[in-house]
Image (cartoon, rainbow, N blue to C red; front, side):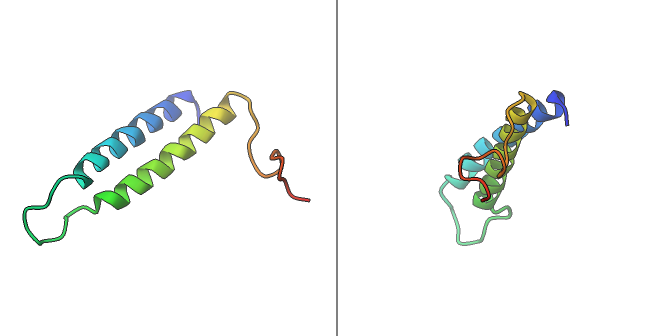
Length: 74
């Protein structure tokens, strides 16, 4: 996955997280449940944003993973 897809993924996931955060914070007018679970969308978009950040760090040449960690497998 190259830089183009990584930047697109970062942009989409961050935009979706901002939208979901805004929608989850709106007051409810009635007792019906939301059609879209915005807090769950916020959690998933934040998770995918983190994955794209890790991918961007890997594309910069910095190795990540359990074998590169100071707390690596013994």
